[in-house]
Image (cartoon, rainbow over all chains, first blue to last red; front, side, top):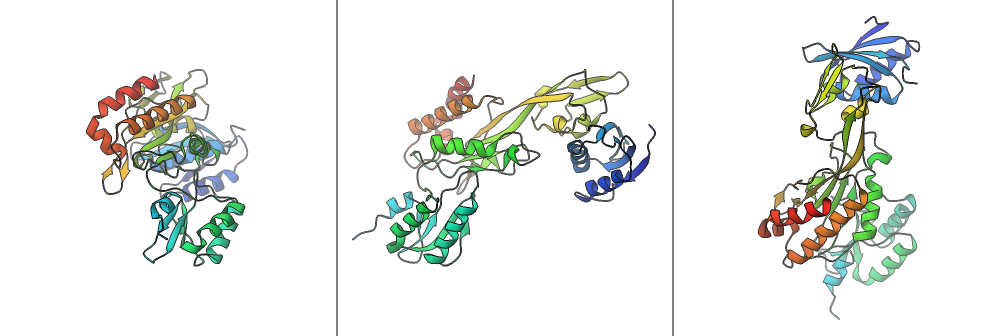
Amino acid sequence: MKSDAFLDITDVVCPITFVKTKVALEDLDDGQILELRLNDGEPVQNVPRSLKDEGHKVLTLEDNGDGTFTLWIEKAGLS
Amino acid sequence: MSTNYKELKKGGFMRQRQPNYFSMRLKSVGGHFTAEQLDTIQNVAKKFGKGYIHLTSRQGIEIPFIHLNDVDAVKKFLSEGGVQVGVCGARVRTITACQGNAICPSGLIDTVHLAKEFDKRYGGRELPHKFKFGFTGCRNNCLKAEENDMGVKGGVKPAWKSETCTFCGLCQAVCPQKTITVDKISRSVTFDENNCLYCGKCIKSCPSDAWQGESGFIISFGGLYGNRIAVGENFLPIVFDEEKLYSIVDATLKFFADNAKSGERFRNMLDRVGWEKFSDVITEVAK
């Protein structure tokens, strides 16, 4: 899947994970896609849920097999 | 004139080490106090106490250093300011709750509404020993349901609809029990309902609302966190109907009143008379 921006949040913890994700999304236009690398556990449990609450749509999730996931998010895809 | 300490304790006045002084327990339901009530409490602490309050372990407020001679005046002052005194002794105690789904994004049930309704129905009821209820909105268990004689935890039973699913794979990643498998190639989802915790993470994270579900109550019995420590046990399936929940509570309190010796905690009574006897009664009511 083609993305318009990439962000790695595997080096930060909650709540910075979501703060950095929000900042990255602000730089995009509605409908553009952010590719996000995040850790298993708390980040993958919480970041997608918060994205949903703010109207962004998760398109797909890939398990990288190294304790991280890559998430493709369409900005404002739910609104 | 002799002082009836037992009667005072029943009415929320806890005897202090200092002669003739009491730490006054206030009524709390679901951990909510209004600004007006806090104003009244502040004034009582300043006027009759020593200018401070104590927050108890179960969401209560106590005002220490109330003198025996001021008991009636303090009661009147509080009642005029919308504050009631609490209870102690062998009865239904303060009913505790997290903020639940009215406030918290993780909440699955309206804990504060339930705490208020329970207080109306059961608050202060006399029993063989103290009895504590606690409500927690979800599996995160911030309010620690299993510490209570009877704890109620919010849960949700998920169901999957194929029509809206995009097979993104998120539910598989967020499920703490690994009960969900998403096959992106064949576009299929399997769900092992028997191992589901009813946490609702699949529903809350699903971007296409393919996961939906009905919220309900996960009930635990027999928690103790004092001299003896025991975790409340859950043997019932999740209960969806609020009226059914009240029937279960009615039956539980009746079983406690009918079977416990005076001064025997609910858990200790269950261990003595047998859990099976209790679970047979409750399982029948919960049907």
